[in-house]
Amino acid sequence: MHTGTEGEKEIQRQQGTSKRASKFYNSQMKNELSAKMKALIERQEMFFIATADAQGNCDCSPRFGQQGFIKILDNTTLAYPEYLGNGVFASLGNILENPHIGIVFVDFFDSTVGLHVNGSANSYKDFEIPKMYQEQISGFSKEIQVPIEQWVLVSIDEAYIHCSKHVPKLEKKDKTIHWGTDSKKEKAVDFFETAE
Image 1 (cartoon, rainbow, N blue to C red):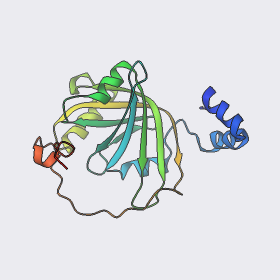
Image 2 (cartoon, helix red, strand yellow):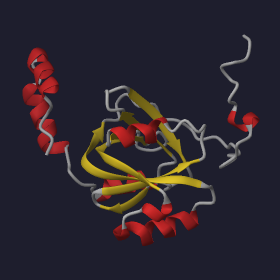
Image 3 (cartoon, rainbow, N blue to C red):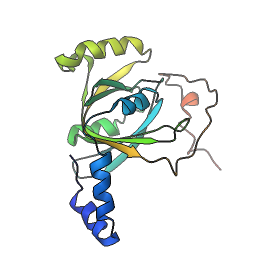
Image 4 (cartoon, one colour):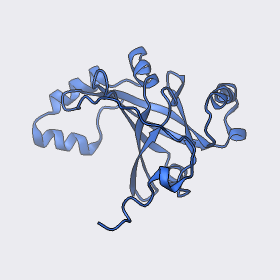
């Protein structure tokens, strides 16, 4: 169970929060998903992943899909599909060099609670998926109507709450989603390149 990195402990000493942090580690940090954590994950249409390469250069990227597109394989394993993107593969490239991954889910529309999941990740083409998960992933792939580049499997080390006090509550609006398109217009790829 996570009890704080050396950096965390040093800042806690400086700020006088060691006792408070220790209480958080003991009460909030889990090494597997609870039923409530699973329910929050299953409602999500977006989440954020943080990865870093072998030198520690970081990347944070959102992932989007239809509700429940990130799959719970068991209490300590998640899987999500990588759809067609810009062809750079920044996140997958980082995972190839450094398997550590952080995932943040935020329930903007209901509880405004967030969930941090940290662990290690590997990416697989369909035919490379470990045998113990092949049947589950194959079933998920059939449900998803978008071309899948690879599946990312995440082995969970820790899961813990992101409290709701600063999270805004948002209202969902209708938008036609063009899943899997490579249309420049629908992707708005020139957004930052147009003259002001």
